[in-house]
Image (cartoon, rainbow, N blue to C red):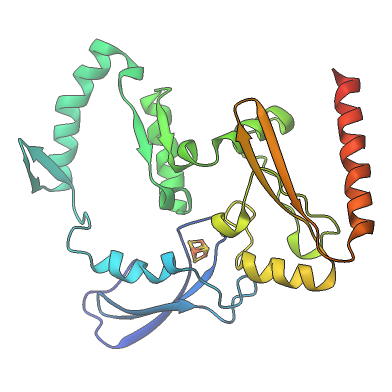
Length: 250
Ligand code: SF4
Protein backbone atom coordinates (compact mmCIF):
# COMPACT_ATOMS: atom_id res chain seq x y z
CA UNK A 1 0.00 0.00 0.00
CA UNK A 2 1.66 3.26 -1.09
CA UNK A 3 1.81 6.01 1.52
CA UNK A 4 3.41 9.35 2.20
CA UNK A 5 5.57 9.06 5.36
CA UNK A 6 5.24 12.81 6.02
CA UNK A 7 1.45 12.74 5.95
CA UNK A 8 -0.13 12.48 9.40
CA UNK A 9 -3.72 13.52 8.85
CA UNK A 10 -6.29 10.83 8.25
CA UNK A 11 -6.82 9.93 4.62
CA UNK A 12 -9.32 7.61 2.92
CA UNK A 13 -8.28 5.63 -0.16
CA UNK A 14 -10.33 3.35 -2.37
CA UNK A 15 -8.57 0.28 -3.72
CA UNK A 16 -9.37 -3.16 -5.07
CA UNK A 17 -8.52 -6.04 -2.78
CA UNK A 18 -5.39 -7.73 -4.18
CA UNK A 19 -6.02 -11.12 -2.64
CA UNK A 20 -8.33 -12.89 -5.07
CA UNK A 21 -10.30 -12.65 -8.32
CA UNK A 22 -13.48 -11.59 -6.52
CA UNK A 23 -11.93 -8.08 -6.67
CA UNK A 24 -13.87 -6.52 -3.79
CA UNK A 25 -13.70 -2.76 -3.37
CA UNK A 26 -11.99 -1.64 -0.15
CA UNK A 27 -12.14 1.63 1.78
CA UNK A 28 -8.79 2.10 3.53
CA UNK A 29 -8.22 4.80 6.13
CA UNK A 30 -4.57 5.66 6.79
CA UNK A 31 -2.70 8.06 9.01
CA UNK A 32 0.82 8.51 7.70
CA UNK A 33 2.25 5.01 7.20
CA UNK A 34 -0.32 3.46 9.58
CA UNK A 35 -3.45 1.71 8.36
CA UNK A 36 -6.26 2.81 10.67
CA UNK A 37 -9.08 0.71 9.23
CA UNK A 38 -10.12 -1.40 6.26
CA UNK A 39 -13.76 -1.96 5.40
CA UNK A 40 -15.81 -2.81 2.33
CA UNK A 41 -16.55 0.08 -0.01
CA UNK A 42 -20.34 0.36 0.02
CA UNK A 43 -20.24 2.43 -3.18
CA UNK A 44 -18.30 -0.17 -5.13
CA UNK A 45 -20.67 -1.07 -7.96
CA UNK A 46 -19.41 -4.63 -8.00
CA UNK A 47 -18.97 -5.78 -4.38
CA UNK A 48 -21.39 -3.29 -2.70
CA UNK A 49 -19.43 -3.21 0.56
CA UNK A 50 -18.78 -6.92 0.88
CA UNK A 51 -15.37 -8.11 2.03
CA UNK A 52 -14.16 -11.34 3.58
CA UNK A 53 -11.90 -11.71 6.66
CA UNK A 54 -8.77 -11.89 4.52
CA UNK A 55 -9.17 -8.28 3.47
CA UNK A 56 -9.61 -7.14 7.11
CA UNK A 57 -6.33 -8.90 7.85
CA UNK A 58 -4.45 -6.70 5.36
CA UNK A 59 -4.15 -4.12 8.17
CA UNK A 60 -2.29 -6.64 10.38
CA UNK A 61 -0.26 -7.84 7.41
CA UNK A 62 0.80 -4.27 6.66
CA UNK A 63 2.03 -3.64 10.21
CA UNK A 64 3.47 -7.11 10.83
CA UNK A 65 7.08 -6.62 12.00
CA UNK A 66 8.06 -9.75 10.05
CA UNK A 67 6.83 -8.35 6.72
CA UNK A 68 9.73 -8.10 4.27
CA UNK A 69 10.34 -4.38 3.70
CA UNK A 70 13.69 -4.43 1.96
CA UNK A 71 15.90 -6.99 0.16
CA UNK A 72 17.45 -9.51 2.53
CA UNK A 73 20.42 -11.83 2.21
CA UNK A 74 20.76 -14.98 4.27
CA UNK A 75 24.10 -15.56 5.96
CA UNK A 76 24.02 -18.99 7.57
CA UNK A 77 20.97 -19.08 9.80
CA UNK A 78 20.49 -15.33 10.01
CA UNK A 79 19.23 -12.74 7.57
CA UNK A 80 20.40 -9.19 7.06
CA UNK A 81 18.77 -6.27 5.28
CA UNK A 82 20.67 -4.96 2.27
CA UNK A 83 20.27 -2.27 -0.36
CA UNK A 84 18.87 -3.04 -3.79
CA UNK A 85 22.36 -2.60 -5.31
CA UNK A 86 23.75 -5.20 -2.92
CA UNK A 87 20.86 -7.53 -3.64
CA UNK A 88 21.30 -7.32 -7.42
CA UNK A 89 25.07 -7.83 -7.07
CA UNK A 90 24.44 -10.96 -4.96
CA UNK A 91 21.93 -12.29 -7.48
CA UNK A 92 24.43 -11.80 -10.30
CA UNK A 93 27.23 -13.43 -8.28
CA UNK A 94 25.28 -16.54 -7.36
CA UNK A 95 22.56 -16.99 -9.99
CA UNK A 96 24.64 -16.53 -13.15
CA UNK A 97 26.98 -19.53 -12.50
CA UNK A 98 24.03 -21.75 -11.54
CA UNK A 99 22.27 -20.95 -14.83
CA UNK A 100 25.38 -21.41 -16.96
CA UNK A 101 26.47 -24.64 -15.28
CA UNK A 102 23.12 -26.36 -14.76
CA UNK A 103 20.77 -24.81 -17.32
CA UNK A 104 17.67 -22.62 -17.08
CA UNK A 105 15.49 -25.35 -15.56
CA UNK A 106 17.78 -25.63 -12.54
CA UNK A 107 16.03 -22.55 -11.18
CA UNK A 108 12.41 -22.41 -10.06
CA UNK A 109 10.26 -19.37 -9.33
CA UNK A 110 7.22 -19.11 -7.10
CA UNK A 111 4.76 -16.22 -7.45
CA UNK A 112 2.47 -15.54 -4.51
CA UNK A 113 -1.21 -14.83 -4.95
CA UNK A 114 -1.34 -11.00 -4.68
CA UNK A 115 1.32 -10.59 -7.38
CA UNK A 116 -1.22 -11.87 -9.92
CA UNK A 117 -3.57 -9.03 -9.02
CA UNK A 118 -0.97 -6.27 -9.09
CA UNK A 119 -0.42 -4.51 -12.40
CA UNK A 120 3.25 -3.66 -11.69
CA UNK A 121 4.23 -7.19 -10.78
CA UNK A 122 2.18 -8.62 -13.64
CA UNK A 123 4.15 -6.43 -16.03
CA UNK A 124 7.62 -6.99 -14.61
CA UNK A 125 7.23 -10.63 -13.59
CA UNK A 126 6.35 -11.56 -17.16
CA UNK A 127 9.59 -9.99 -18.42
CA UNK A 128 11.66 -11.52 -15.60
CA UNK A 129 10.23 -15.02 -16.09
CA UNK A 130 10.72 -14.86 -19.83
CA UNK A 131 14.37 -13.92 -19.28
CA UNK A 132 14.75 -16.71 -16.73
CA UNK A 133 13.31 -19.19 -19.28
CA UNK A 134 12.77 -21.99 -16.78
CA UNK A 135 9.88 -24.41 -17.11
CA UNK A 136 9.68 -24.55 -13.33
CA UNK A 137 7.30 -21.70 -12.57
CA UNK A 138 4.98 -22.18 -9.62
CA UNK A 139 2.19 -19.95 -8.39
CA UNK A 140 -0.76 -20.06 -6.03
CA UNK A 141 -2.66 -21.36 -9.08
CA UNK A 142 -0.51 -24.46 -9.39
CA UNK A 143 -1.59 -25.58 -5.93
CA UNK A 144 -5.16 -24.41 -6.40
CA UNK A 145 -6.90 -23.90 -9.73
CA UNK A 146 -4.52 -25.46 -12.26
CA UNK A 147 -6.97 -28.22 -13.34
CA UNK A 148 -9.37 -25.44 -14.34
CA UNK A 149 -6.68 -23.63 -16.29
CA UNK A 150 -5.50 -26.80 -18.04
CA UNK A 151 -9.06 -27.70 -19.07
CA UNK A 152 -9.64 -24.13 -20.33
CA UNK A 153 -6.38 -24.27 -22.30
CA UNK A 154 -7.43 -27.53 -23.94
CA UNK A 155 -10.99 -26.39 -24.64
CA UNK A 156 -10.54 -22.71 -25.50
CA UNK A 157 -6.92 -22.42 -26.59
CA UNK A 158 -5.45 -20.44 -23.69
CA UNK A 159 -5.10 -21.27 -20.02
CA UNK A 160 -6.51 -17.87 -19.07
CA UNK A 161 -9.60 -18.17 -21.30
CA UNK A 162 -11.65 -19.01 -18.24
CA UNK A 163 -15.42 -18.79 -18.75
CA UNK A 164 -17.07 -16.76 -16.01
CA UNK A 165 -20.73 -17.60 -15.40
CA UNK A 166 -23.12 -14.70 -14.91
CA UNK A 167 -24.27 -15.98 -11.54
CA UNK A 168 -26.84 -13.20 -11.05
CA UNK A 169 -28.66 -13.86 -14.31
CA UNK A 170 -28.29 -17.57 -14.87
CA UNK A 171 -31.26 -19.90 -15.37
CA UNK A 172 -29.31 -23.05 -14.49
CA UNK A 173 -26.31 -23.16 -12.20
CA UNK A 174 -24.72 -26.59 -12.31
CA UNK A 175 -21.61 -26.77 -10.14
CA UNK A 176 -19.45 -29.86 -10.28
CA UNK A 177 -16.16 -30.28 -8.44
CA UNK A 178 -16.27 -26.85 -6.82
CA UNK A 179 -17.71 -25.17 -3.78
CA UNK A 180 -18.08 -21.43 -4.33
CA UNK A 181 -18.90 -20.90 -0.66
CA UNK A 182 -15.41 -22.15 0.19
CA UNK A 183 -13.62 -20.43 -2.69
CA UNK A 184 -15.70 -17.31 -1.93
CA UNK A 185 -16.53 -16.76 -5.58
CA UNK A 186 -12.86 -16.21 -6.34
CA UNK A 187 -12.40 -17.52 -9.86
CA UNK A 188 -16.03 -16.66 -10.66
CA UNK A 189 -15.16 -13.02 -9.98
CA UNK A 190 -18.32 -12.83 -7.89
CA UNK A 191 -17.93 -11.13 -4.51
CA UNK A 192 -20.37 -12.13 -1.75
CA UNK A 193 -21.04 -15.55 -3.24
CA UNK A 194 -23.23 -16.53 -0.29
CA UNK A 195 -25.45 -13.47 -0.80
CA UNK A 196 -25.60 -13.98 -4.57
CA UNK A 197 -26.60 -17.63 -4.23
CA UNK A 198 -29.18 -16.72 -1.58
CA UNK A 199 -30.74 -14.13 -3.91
CA UNK A 200 -30.65 -16.64 -6.76
CA UNK A 201 -32.35 -19.25 -4.60
CA UNK A 202 -35.12 -16.79 -3.71
CA UNK A 203 -36.14 -16.42 -7.35
CA UNK A 204 -35.65 -20.02 -8.48
CA UNK A 205 -34.88 -23.30 -6.70
CA UNK A 206 -31.50 -24.84 -7.27
CA UNK A 207 -29.81 -28.10 -6.53
CA UNK A 208 -26.78 -28.53 -4.38
CA UNK A 209 -24.37 -31.33 -5.02
CA UNK A 210 -21.69 -32.91 -2.99
CA UNK A 211 -19.32 -35.03 -4.98
CA UNK A 212 -17.03 -37.61 -3.42
CA UNK A 213 -14.43 -39.56 -5.36
CA UNK A 214 -13.76 -42.97 -3.86
CA UNK A 215 -11.26 -45.10 -5.77
CA UNK A 216 -12.73 -45.31 -9.29
CA UNK A 217 -16.27 -44.41 -8.26
CA UNK A 218 -17.66 -40.89 -8.24
CA UNK A 219 -20.68 -40.41 -6.01
CA UNK A 220 -22.94 -37.44 -6.54
CA UNK A 221 -25.44 -36.56 -3.80
CA UNK A 222 -28.13 -34.25 -5.03
CA UNK A 223 -30.20 -32.15 -2.63
CA UNK A 224 -33.48 -31.18 -4.28
CA UNK A 225 -35.60 -28.44 -2.72
CA UNK A 226 -39.35 -29.00 -2.28
CA UNK A 227 -41.42 -28.39 -5.37
CA UNK A 228 -38.44 -28.63 -7.71
CA UNK A 229 -39.51 -31.75 -9.61
CA UNK A 230 -39.66 -29.74 -12.82
CA UNK A 231 -36.04 -28.68 -12.35
CA UNK A 232 -35.01 -32.26 -11.61
CA UNK A 233 -36.62 -33.38 -14.89
CA UNK A 234 -34.70 -30.64 -16.67
CA UNK A 235 -31.45 -31.69 -15.01
CA UNK A 236 -32.04 -35.31 -16.06
CA UNK A 237 -32.66 -34.15 -19.64
CA UNK A 238 -29.46 -32.07 -19.65
CA UNK A 239 -27.35 -34.86 -18.11
CA UNK A 240 -28.71 -37.44 -20.57
CA UNK A 241 -28.03 -35.12 -23.49
CA UNK A 242 -24.47 -34.39 -22.28
CA UNK A 243 -23.69 -38.09 -21.87
CA UNK A 244 -25.12 -38.87 -25.34
CA UNK A 245 -22.99 -36.10 -26.90
CA UNK A 246 -19.88 -37.43 -25.17
CA UNK A 247 -20.47 -41.03 -26.31
CA UNK A 248 -21.05 -39.79 -29.89
CA UNK A 249 -17.67 -37.99 -29.76
CA UNK A 250 -15.96 -41.13 -28.44
S1 SF4 B 1 -13.35 -12.29 -1.40
FE1 SF4 B 1 -11.28 -12.04 -2.32
S2 SF4 B 1 -11.28 -9.96 -3.18
FE2 SF4 B 1 -13.00 -10.07 -1.71
S3 SF4 B 1 -12.18 -9.34 0.22
FE3 SF4 B 1 -11.93 -11.57 0.23
S4 SF4 B 1 -9.89 -11.94 -0.59
FE4 SF4 B 1 -10.43 -9.82 -1.10
